[in-house]
Image 1 (cartoon, helix red, strand yellow):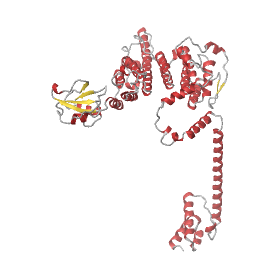
Image 2: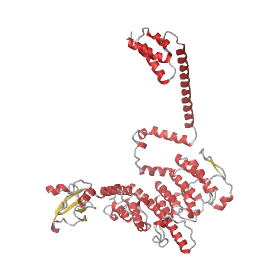
Image 3: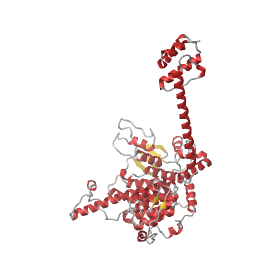
Image 4: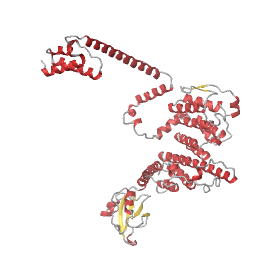
Length: 562
């Protein structure tokens, strides 16, 4: 038996929804389980305003017709919703299975990814593989590219013969005659894309761009071939009001992304022959990065020197136009001097854009060489940047406009320097010659950085300090010249007024908190303090205790004088 208070609660809840007549019937003795069930029914009905379930185990005396009607209608609605949900899941599974088993490029790509996941499940585990930071494995990348070159394609050419004849810069090579292409009828080329299903005479440039982007993202080699047929063999140079050159550059980048180098080289050659006047530095820079991705460094340099070359001396005068005037280059003038002024302004804008993309492309080449353990080629690229630093400053470019990735280049050079100290290139059979290198490979990057506009970024300077300063130890303090250590290496001296932060700067460069003593009181440093940088390991034990420590100092060792 339930207490009277619990039975009153049940009666009140039932009366709230079904009326007082129904509630009065609940004062009969009921069990605890039945009471709990009825309370749950009432609360659920009041809260959601939906039908109640009627259970034969909990029969209620009195007029229950309203209760039975509501519960039966609710049960029917619920069962109908469950059947609809089950049918929807079955239809979705059927469509998904049909799509995965079809010949659609997206289905093929998903099947390939699923197969790779089954073959190498560790690579796709949570926290690893594609979800972690990507690590370049250039050995596997090279093997994959060499394997892809062996596959036969209708655009195949002999790559060795192409390099020997230097076809990239040979203007005598005409893959297609523009007039013949205009006279020929344009055939229909079907694509896998749903938005752009075919390419024909009515196709616009925007549709071709959309088709190229889709084929590149989905790795659809069939569409790339069809687009190449359309652009290289069907349409002429005047297609899309001269926009064909930009389309060829996009197609070249997409082909390189799919490792189809033959289509890319044909696009680059056709673009250079018939569309040289409409070349854009941004497109040339994208082609250079695509060639680097496929390890065609020589071809990347050829495109760089041909399409992103430095201007001839005297071709543009940067001193005659200010930055304010450069933004007003569209002003119409009739005076001859004003026309010359406008032409010089136009050339300035063109040269500035070319310099920006040339610097970024050379930075990509240098970074690629450093991270592939080719420091010699990387330092040659740094020399190219050092040579163009003068004209970059004359053009008035800032570090924000150029956007050089100095941090990445410094870390790549530091990695090569670390391997050099471990003796990687000391073998006689090595293609690298360390005897011609500077004492530290990072110094070649530092020379290029000095020639460019200054960049005030903490991460860049932190990377430089970590690469140039590895070990630091206090050697001695001198009050006259007799107390100075032997001059067997370079010295860097910090000179300035008292209490301006010289010692704090030393601590910052060496990444040490209390290497040099600092104080708010002026005159804390009262002698020449010598700190040995990159000296032999355990030098501090030799200085303090007089023990003989084996080893020699590094080639880039120097003194910091505070």
